Length: 263
Image (tube, rainbow, N blue to C red; front, side, top):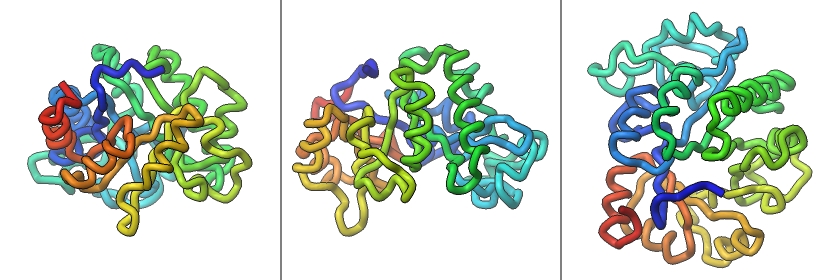
């Protein structure tokens, strides 16, 4: 079980991404400084086998480069500017390696981690499994497995990881089931530690019966909204949300604190 320090923990999505360029050391350091309970981070593998931290498969949106991460070497990725797209004051911010992040976070043992593996078998075959294995081996080496979930959008990859690592890992999945892809074989609530009950414009917060269903399976219902609001937060809390992932964790922690749900 994860060691929660608050009644309803808050995860900083890609670091404190409201104010800092996502998945950079600046965003991660800020998430620690503001007292977030957890960090949600994203991992890819470079062409030469290094694990780096970025959300998109392409480098185009958040750097001054172009193309797939897996088509670049680490040297090429590290040469990119990962900050200017957010604000000129972040010019020169680098794409971190996972090792760089782990070296930093080892000094903050209470910070929980939601580690999203972004290389998927239906995109890159065995490359995705190699990427996942390297990431998990680094997590084992740095002793962060107990405070981490492994997050993927691939039921196929989840099932591979469960077969390989078993109880060593805690799987963060998504619900409804179809979000986990076409090549999955198992029901996500049969194996997940937690599920993000995915919001849509049509259904911004799932019905309470869905929250209840996940808890009947012993699975924690987590929630993410692109923009947090009082109404959405209140409804999710009333329905039984156990953790929020937020693009603006400062606002959300303040809001929950006012309700006695966060210290």
